[in-house]
Amino acid sequence: MEYSMKTVFLMLAVSMIIAGCAGREESIDRETEIREISNVIDACIGWFKTKNFELSFGTVAQDSNFLEVHPEGRVVKGFEQFRKNSEIFRHPEFQYVRHEIRDLAVNLSRSGDVAWFYCLLNDINTFKGRPACWENTRWTGVLEKRNGRWVIVQQHFSFATE
Image (cartoon, rainbow, N blue to C red; front, side):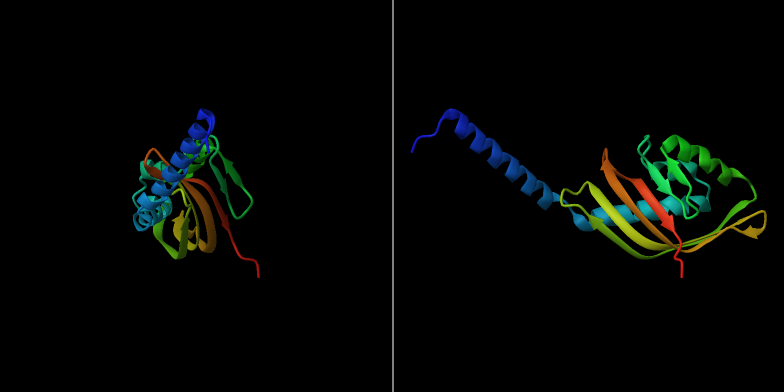
């Protein structure tokens, strides 16, 4: 059976693509990636303990596609709006008390460059001496690995209504 050069080239190209994809999935250390993702998720809230804004900004995608939805319906679109909204946390009377992330479930895509998560969050703070807390908050999000680092590209916070 004879094949044309075009057919042979096409079969070779398809074989290389399949082999490359299979090799990529096998080379991912899924446990390490999930641990790194979990650290980013924790830092997304935990940065406030020391008011490390650079840590906060490093946990999210720094582009116009970043999206964050708050329980009261406010939507933050893009990194610049995220940065602007973060200014309230510089107020000296906005104080970190503690945070807790429970029931964290992280899923990693087959390609290893996208992940999504779910957890329950307690984010306990005070503002001017009064509680400023999110308790038992449902938190979901999507992360993407960019330039070797995991960043949150979308996140959604909500409160259960009973």
